[in-house]
Every structure is written in structure tokens, then in C-alpha cells.
Length: 280
Image (cartoon, rainbow, N blue to C red; front, side, top):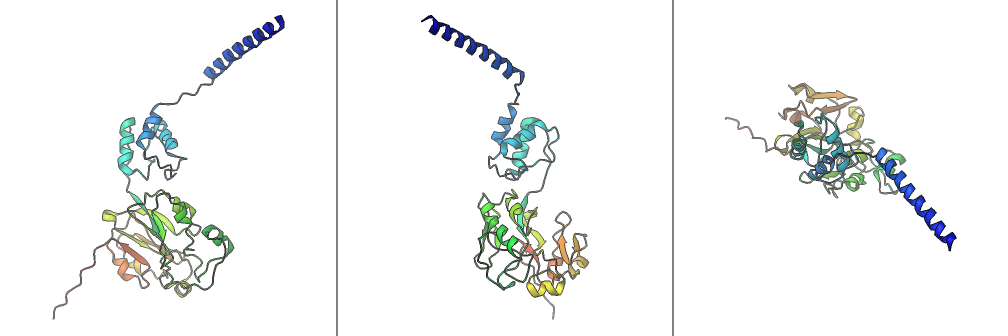
């Protein structure tokens, strides 16, 4: 009986001693967490899409709290309204940034870019891109397997069954950039939404020379520089036989659109152009 009592006392003493040691160790290595992190996390949309560049909304909230200058930080889902609210809560200033949207830079529909072979592998752009250049004559264009659709958590992109090209739902797109990251052909990019959602961009990424590009796709940019010549704002550059429009310089005059011989330059959400009435 004495042995049992002694054993209980020893174990109890050891338990108390270990508890005291653990308490002091916990106090020694205690990590203070700013309560504002949880408060800011509540302001954020909670999408955890990673579009801000952080692992989730809470990680982004921590960055907002710890950084004195948050001008380079942006929550693409919440936009300026959420950023301003979070900044006001922290007594900081959020930078004014233009809202962005995902843009698909490929017009190689089935009609413009006929299929030359049949792909029978896994329905994945990532897999397909490592197997061969594609099932059309253009090795730069969209593969149409829908990796971007799977990556989008906002149901903002889908594959058009007629063109086999991805299309973006402007009402749902949050510019999180998930579709941009998964596209192995780099045909999707984030661009400014523009005033009244009006945008002009070159819907092609084909870097082949003009004749080769035109042969593989009727809607390809052929690098003819006609668009560059008519642009009065220095917004168009030609590199590797391909035109590109800088959306920070473009003034949406649309002169390049009418000048493009292959209709590779797209204009979105513009009203129809007025027809000039010729006097007799």
C-alpha cells in the first residue's frame, strides 16, 4: 500500500513539475498575434483564391497589418471598396488601382484554325502541351481542354462548344489570376477592365512569321505593323512578329481595329460605329 501511495505522489509531483516547466517555456516562446489580423480577415471576402499573391485571405490580412505601406497590395476579389475599408480600419492608405479582368488572347476558332489531327489523350491542357504542339497548325494557340475552367473557383470561364475557345463571364470574373497561372500556352492575361468595360487587345499570341501564322490561322496577327503606324499614343509594339497593345497607354480610339487586315485586334463592349453618310 505504501508503495502505491509513494508512486502516486511521485507521479503527481512530476506532473506538477512538468506543468510548471511547460508554462514557463510557453511564456518564453509565446508568439504575440495582432488581434487586428482577425478583424481585417473578416473584412476580406474570404474567397481564399490566392489572387493577392498570398496563401489565403488570412495570410493577406496579416500582410496588410504588418506592412506600413500597403500600396502594392490588392485583393482582386474585393477590389477598391474592400481595400479602402481594410485600410481605413488600419489607419493606412490603399492605392487606387484600376479593376482588372481576365482576357483570352486567342481567336483561333474551329473555323479560323481547322483541326489537323485528333488528340486522344487525357483531357488536360497541361498534359496535351507536353505531348505535342497541338491539334491544329498553330502551336501557340488555345488547346481547348479547359484547365482554366477547372482552375476558376468563381465559375467565370467556360469553353464555347462551337469555337472550342474559353470565354470569360465579365460579371463573375474577379481577376484572381488562377486561369492565367494554369494556361500552358500563356494566352490568358489580366488587363484593365477599361471605362464602361471597353477594351481593345490583340487576340493572338502566334509568333510565327506572317505567312506561316496566316496559313495556320485565319485570325492570326501577321506582324504587318499597320496598327502600330496608326496609333498616335505609342501603345502598340511589335516583337517576334506579334503586335501587343499596352492597356496603360491605349486610349481606345479604335483606329488599329479597323486597320488590322486579319481582324486579330478585338474590341469589346463598344457601341456600333456610326456609318458615314456620303453626300451626293
